Length: 473
Image (cartoon, rainbow, N blue to C red; front, top):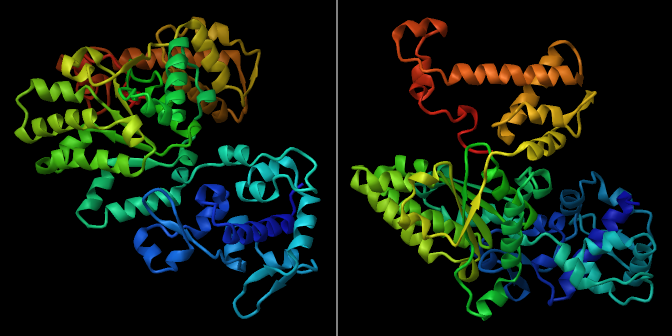
């Protein structure tokens, strides 16, 4: 059971042990403590004691000694008054001038802590797991390597990502590039693979790539380097983007997302440079996932008479794909397209695996509905019935159906839904979908919609994809 005193004592022990044991590195600190002390750049590191510095791969550092003050403890533990939590313990003291809190009797503090810390708590702190491994007062089998493996790596921390981005985009003109690339830490991704309903083939390919990420040193050793470039193909709303993000979350990898149409539509004269920057960002944040959406834009540009700068950008993109490697650069590349029929051979051959994302069948739709509604109160809910009448709908469509059912119920001040609510929501969705896909070519039809020109709004009615999820969920 966690108490404020236990949290503070753990912080004091962790900072003390980490300061003294130079074999420990940043990945031995729990993220909550690590973020407090991360400096963010090598330039900052040079200003501190070089001899007392541990560095992460390439950038930034956590300087030793780690200072345990009211401020640092509060930031790490979210306890408002850290000293009040431990002031009555006989092995703690505070320096009123500096605000530093320290342990006066280490052995007594260790014994006090071990009497209260369970196995899960110690396995969540590799620094203390190593320190107490084999300790006579630990009644369970404490494994430092297991704790280290469980701990979120520093590459997954938002502060680590932000530090590298600030360093790389130091110039004001370079900061424009950040508008074209979205970088998320794993903790900022709100979907996991367990939240998704995947086909057997999708699960198999994801398992293989997860193993490749885990064993990339072995793959490099045996010379197997042509791996780690996936192309997700399928209609909008079938889960391509969600699956890529979920993989980043579950593998504790930064997620770098770029839409090709944005890179090549803004700052036209520097499109090739922007492509280069995108891949450089991914390599600097490695290990990470680089997700390139709208990959069919490559084929459109190569076949058209577009501006020469766009063609140069596409050629740069294809060359950059050739040059990036999961094994050498620790970058997993995932492309996604809603229009695989538009890709030419030059685009296809850049990828070593093609993963199909078809519209879900009846069984998958029922499973998706069960996932979507797991926290909802629905009377007489039968997902199989809803699945039977939603042929052709994607997971994104089903979420919209459920959203409309919930909102409709709320207008009647109800938080409990019924099966009839869902049936009506399906019917309403299909009616809206049919209206949206009507061919509105004749001017007389404009009167059907306020402001007219429904045809223009739906691209002349010739594109029957669902506008509300063109950017794949």
